[in-house]
Length: 180
Image (tube, rainbow, N blue to C red):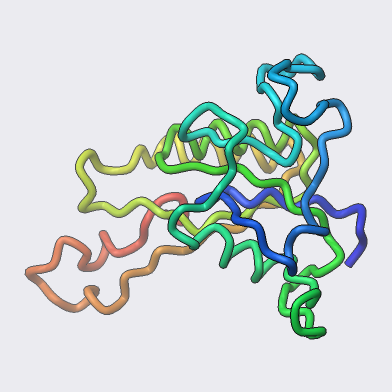
């Protein structure tokens, strides 16, 4: 994998981790922590990405999930000498998100900032209140593809519930957005 490859991880943020620190994408147009949108892209201090759930540059991962998915992507082995990431030489653009809308905004950011690949582990289930906006997920997927962004997302297949006739996640409602 090339060090020129930029992967946008649209997930729960990222915490400091030796296997990930050298892999963080750097927005060359930003000056860190000066409180100014130096590159005039609408995002202040987006040096390593942006937190779309809080509209800030604070990318810390409170729950650990985003850091885990980042490790699966670009973990380079700095801690153990064993690279565990699928693309350990790639750059990681962090797009912290917590909702459908913040996910869609993060994907637009990834396209605008030149990411090659976007991945997310978030999915939205048919039994959520409100239910997912399937049409918007399809539109975002089509726009991403047209822009040349390769996207990978959790398929959200809740197969364990598929055969249970009393489950809200039975077939055909067991495929979550954006996989649907």
